Image 1 (cartoon, helix red, strand yellow):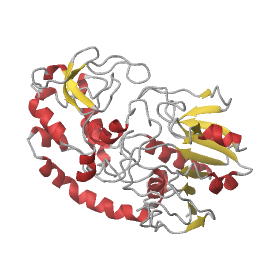
Image 2 (cartoon, helix red, strand yellow; image 1 turned 90 degrees about the vertical axis):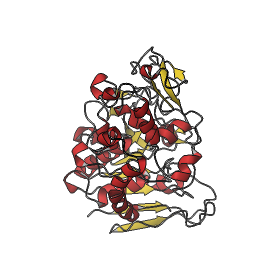
Image 3 (cartoon, one colour; image 1 turned 135 degrees about the horizontal axis):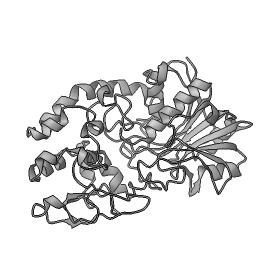
Image 4 (cartoon, helix red, strand yellow; image 1 turned 45 degrees about the horizontal axis):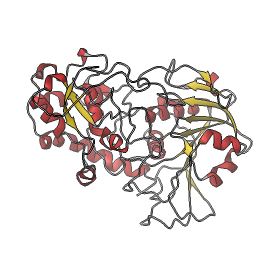
Length: 413
């Protein structure tokens, strides 16, 4: 097994109660402590004093997007100024600059600002090829996640780790907080519904940072051919999973507010339901509606085509009636630590088109709800009028096993 390196900061004085958390129980770990005192929260990327010496003399590839920042400067620009030899940039869904719509393939290009080749991992291939990694000594992965299984950047991390394990390259992960890291919820993904929005048997809300998830990928043998990738995690300093965190940069075009990020674990499920969930508006994932709900709900809005967000949203240019969650008190979510199934249940009961509610064939903007929820019985549970409590009871055995397994990989309390 190859070595895991976990770099942590010493003498953390803010957000106490062992803010650095427990070290992983994965074998063959080593811990390198910095000699500085950190007095406030910092992301992994901000702790240049830890990792710059490790990059000296190395040709660096970087998997980044607009969330990859140090202060207000992109991590690419910041590290170039610090003399790091960045030879290639890799961009996930939405592209390196974050201006491609969801689901739109992105081509390779040369980044106009830096002149560095930018390779797309959301186009012809999602896993870097041997040619892509040629001339790269170490890959840095620095992308903000939102803590939800169907958010595709965690899959990008897996593909990068698999490629680097194949070619004997190291991956350095600049860890960032999980804004939904305070809870764990949803059914464990059934392998029958494995897809590009769900690769591994984890719940919808997984309660991990990407650094922790990388350890899980290695430790559970989930990489292709059960390979082990050499990883170095540059931890967040003074961070706990329960710490509220407001993202300084929107993580993707349609997660453009903190409200949308906190509602996303629930409202993204509507991508498998014949309802518009705010795509085609400036407030995606915070409103839900359809023309056929006229008379059932007073609130209304009209989706339109928005370049870079949603050019052809469901019910484009039609008045939709439904729920306005833009001012929903997200503290309720922190108290319940649960996704809100009540919205789905209520909308199904109100729908005069129940036969179409889960019909993903009605629009190319939809997908089978099973791919999102991760199990095969949810659709029928809603149709049969099962209560939220009854539905949740079917999730609990898998959740209990996952929570116990997760403890092995935690870097934070």
